[in-house]
Length: 327
Image (cartoon, rainbow, N blue to C red; front, side, top):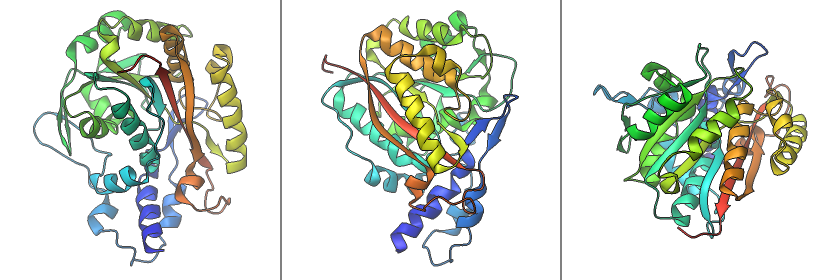
């Protein structure tokens, strides 16, 4: 039971990263389960430093990964599933909610096994902070707990020139949806660069197609791994979230763009990111494989109840676009 409690506390501490949008497009957080888990007795083995969740600060002028706690990384890596890696993984969808860190590890491990030619991990992520632009990016490098990750400035220039992305370093640091993945990039692809793009909610309906077009126009796209950072159902009960996930899964498999782009927080936190992912998969001509689907209650191993989850659960998918052409 001791190991189970450590995992539960570790996951709960990171639930603050679970955000969705309300009807006005403003980010909201789900912190309810944290209160419950904090009542677990103090003999769990979790250090006081971990409980305080102090941000990682470099002081070097590089961008920091403030939401990532490397103290939990080994458990995520050990818990990760062995997703299929027999085909070349071109792109995928993973959570940014670090409660599901083992799902992120599983995706990166499979991608690393599937190909050896990845030079840049392109991260397309949900923006949780209000702003006046559709896209935000950065030219700066990142300082992760595992080392510095360089930014691919050629791709960032493409983001700025072709999609009108605004450069906003503070936003990239403050929003967990891209920065949380940087340490995974460094660990599983030590030599790879990254290029991050935050996608804001509620703008032009042409945004998903425009984004997919820009990504597909990257000159060396065959040497990129495209990672879409998306969480799914928010604020529903576990049963309701499962039903919403079934609808989401069907829309993705059928490439129903109208359905996807009309989704609310009941299904996904960024319908436009998800639609762009499906479109990019279609451009590459490759099928989408659903590697995993679960929710907060599944991950924590704590059965759903309104008392424990008064704000509902968050659900997660791991999706992979795979090619028969080996890496």
